[in-house]
Image 1 (spheres, rainbow, N blue to C red):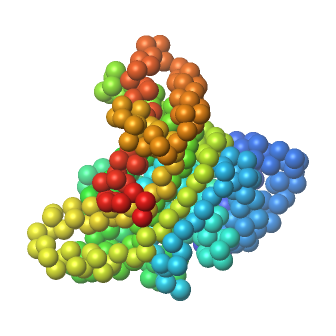
Image 2: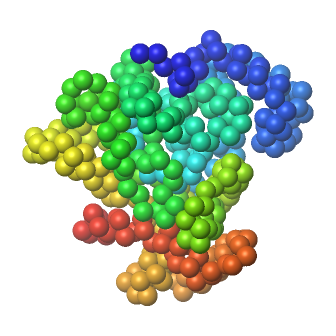
Image 3: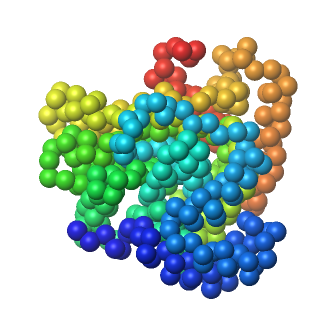
Amino acid sequence: MNFDAIRSYNDDEIPAGLERLSQNKQFMNVLSTVYPLIPKDALRQRLTSFKSKNDFQKVMIYPFLQYLEANMTKGINLKGKEKLQEGRNYLYVSNHRDIILDSALLCAKFLEVGMDTVEIAIGDNLLIFPWIEDLVRINKSFIVRRSPGAKQMLESSRQMAQYMKYIINEKGQSAWIAQREGRAKDSNDQTQESLLKMFNLCGDGTFAENLSALHICPLSISYEFDPCDYLKAKEFQQKRDNPEFRKSPQDDLLNMKTGVMGYKGKVVYTLAGEISEKIQQLASRLSNRNELVSATATLIDSHIYRNYSIFNVNKIAFDLLEQSDRFASEYSLMEKLDFEKYLGKQIEKIDLDNKDVDFLMIKLLEMYANPLKNYLSVAQDLHH
């Protein structure tokens, strides 16, 4: 099958792609804000000097991610690496909080522990300018065509699934994909069944055989603070007030920028290990295909929930939302007041004519409480 329309660039295509980027005014302006101390000509020279994706990532992208970790987080941890098998490639399926950083910071952590970066699935709705497609494909991303029309949809999904199988089994790379299209705006993470049906198109075997060929490893991403929380809350009200509301490309750009440059507190990535055997066990029990798809989605969700890192802000939000003191002994009054002050500041940032402060507050609290709620739904013992 031909993957040219969606695949990441090969190394022999990197110089031409970087040359195009170096000629693009808008991209060079973005690069200048990332590296403000380097003159544009020097940046252009450096940009066009790379001959491979790996060099570009290590020299151009990684230092910026280090800067973000030092300045916009309280530290980023990677857990569960011991659950991976040396020399095996995986499809990491994770919850989705931040448009750009979910996969970018994961790659940075992998580099630090001597692992290769992963190929990244990115929705074509984010390719707002032509140069963004060049940039992401240079940066090991492949394109998910979101709405090619019903007829092309099946073909597009099959191409996508087979490309992922090709990455993992032939190209010798791991890949990352979010468990659903778009971020879970209320942090209630759930794996889309349509995604698993797409995975199934990677081969001609049974559902369990096809999914096993992808070596699926659930991945939990926990951010203490979500810099886009107020933008997500705003969107909830816009959709409530006007069910037809759709984000504009400008909104997407603002979300990307806010997510990257905002403060995230502690960030934790936790790998669950491969679940192929568990999918095969489900398949031996369930003969109904729809039940099997649904049970597999639940299986991925339960691994993601179990591996969340729960922060005090999650406990405070839970108690405020439920009007309970279930976790009150685990945080101080000061922490509670600080968090309430933080939420107030986030709501102040929301520019809506008919701002519904009570509604917005509930939405913000849900975002911070839902990971804990889901964690409690699968973890009998909170302090295991």
